[in-house]
Image 1 (cartoon, rainbow, N blue to C red):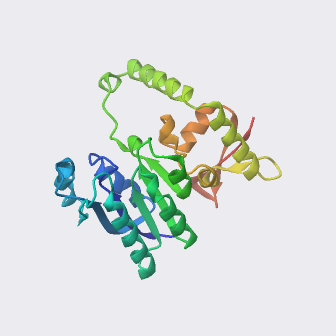
Image 2: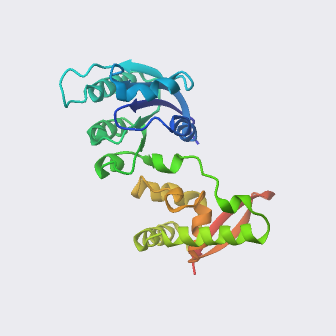
Image 3: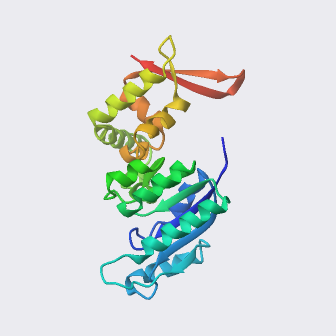
Amino acid sequence: MQDHKLAVLIDADNVPYANVKEMLEEVSKSGTPTVKRIYGDWTKPHLSGWKNVLLENAITPVQQYSYTTGKNSSDSALIIDAMDILYSEKVTGFCIVSSDSDFTRLATRLREAGMLVIGIGERKTPPPFIAACNKFIYIEILKPAEKTEEAKVSGKAAVKGNQATVQKTVDKVDKQTVKMIVNSVDALADETGWAFLGSLGNFISKKKPDFDPRNYGFNKLYDMIRYMDKFQIDEREAGGHKHVKHIYLRLK
C-alpha cells in the first residue's frame, strides 16, 4: 500500500475548529501530511477560535482579506495554492477540508492528475463535492465518543446496555445501503461465492465516497457486516500464520 504524501488544505470559513486533532488523525490513516495550510480572513472575529489550535497542530495560516462582501476570497487562495502544490510534484494526494461545493472542480482536476483526493466536511456538504473525492469523511463521526451511563455500570447491566446500543445502530442501516453491500459482495465473489472483506471497503468507496461504517454506529466494516446477519463469515489463516486471519463472506 502506497504511503501518500498529503497536502492538507483547510477552508476555515466552512468547517468547525473543534475537531482539528481528530481530522488530522483521520488524514494520517491515508498518508503523511507534509503540507498543512488553513485559509481565511484572520481579521474577522468569527475565526478567532481557530487561532488557539493552529500552533498545537503545526498548521500554517494563510491570510486572505475579504475584498467584497458576500464573496469568499479564501476559496480562490486555496485553489491557487493547490495547483501550485500539484505542479511542484512534492505530494501524491490532497485533503480538502471544507463543506463548500465550490471545491468540486478542484477535486475533479486533482483526481484527473492522478492525485488521491480526500474530502472532510459536515453532513450538509453538497453531493457533487462528495462524489468528486476518492473518499469523503463526515466531521460528525470524528467527535470523541462521549461517556455514557452504561460505561459506568458493571457486569450484566453493561452488557445489556451495549446490546441495546448495537440494536439501535443496526436499525440505522437503510435498505439501500444493505442492497449496495450485498451487490458489492456479489461482484467481488469468486466462483464459490466467497468475497474477501479486505477488498470490500475499497470497492464500496469507489461507488460511494462517503461510505463509512461509523456513519451507522460501527467502528469497523466487519462489525457492521456481522450484525447485518445476511452473510456467512469464514476466518482463514493468512499464509499459514495462525495469528493472522483473513475474513471472507458470502450471502446466506
